[in-house]
Length: 174
Image (cartoon, rainbow, N blue to C red; front, side, top):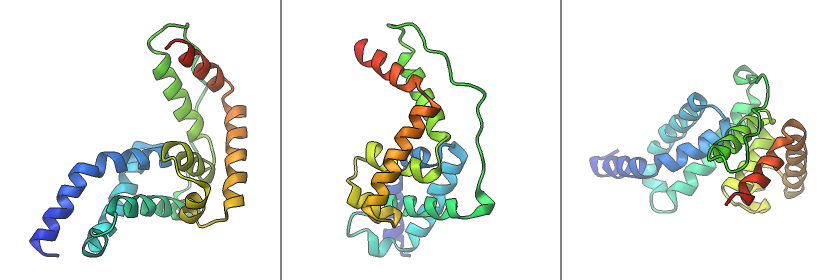
């Protein structure tokens, strides 16, 4: 890679890595795993920078994040379980920490979902992608995306019934 392409890639990473890291964190649920995922994707992206820089490099790298995470799920040696003791208690209405509680509770609940369920929810709600794009990214059919989405939401409601209560309090306190 020549110096100009290297500088261009460095500038891109400096400006867009925070956004890419947030996506990686939402996918993995763990800071260290998100850092590893992003580093792996960026290391592969730098090799192809001359080709991908002319299109939409951020979209290319986001897709690479999802696909790399999917391949990690399929690898038995990287599979880890995350357990938590209990869901945090609901705070009184009007408490400014309600938003923080909602985010922490949601993060813990997402961490307890199966990786594919979490990816479908992240792509649908965090990335605001349609079923057709989600299916393409996760290499499955649109009907699989819809069924995984329904199962993920049902599982979230079972794992954390307080989420709906917290979300309602959050909306009414605004």
